[in-house]
Image 1 (spheres, helix red, strand yellow):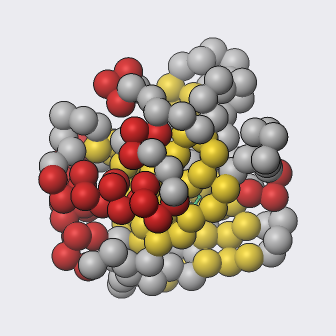
Image 2 (cartoon, rainbow, N blue to C red):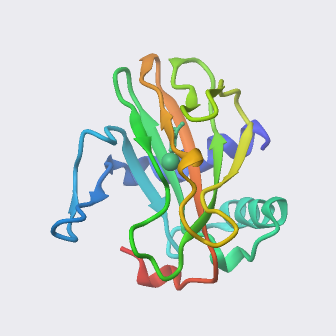
Image 3 (cartoon, rainbow, N blue to C red):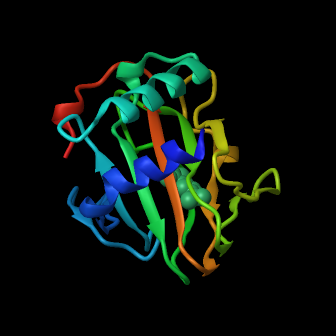
Length: 177
Ligand code: PD2
Ligand code: ZN
């Protein structure tokens, strides 16, 4: 992705950033959790401009998926010490599963923050503008344990990243909170 578009995405999300939350499987509520300590913001349909729309179209083309199967582009901002501990991007008991994930690394000027896949022992060292696409599910649709991954702690500076979680089938972007 061109650096100017990376900066644009970060700029769209910046005023909406809030501590990242996850769904608590016990209560079904959104809660903050040490698994994910960054700030994040989803660029939903009300905030999606033409540049973000074009990026989402490129993600769909590169992944061979329907643009309507992508969740709203979500920006994460990690400050020193913040991280995303090992997890699967799949959801428990989802009818419309997250089959792929595209990560876009938006900036330079930080240390740490590698994306690490423990099972294959693979570390991706982010470079600005890079995109990383991986599958989360097996051919039969069940979660693939090998896709477990983490955003390593940022050691210095600020890491900006955008995530596009891609479902098996189109979803209503207005229905997500
Ligand atoms: O920031 C990352 O490198 C990272 C790592 C793992 C992001 C995500 N998962 C994600 O957004 O799902
Ligand atoms: Zn993830």
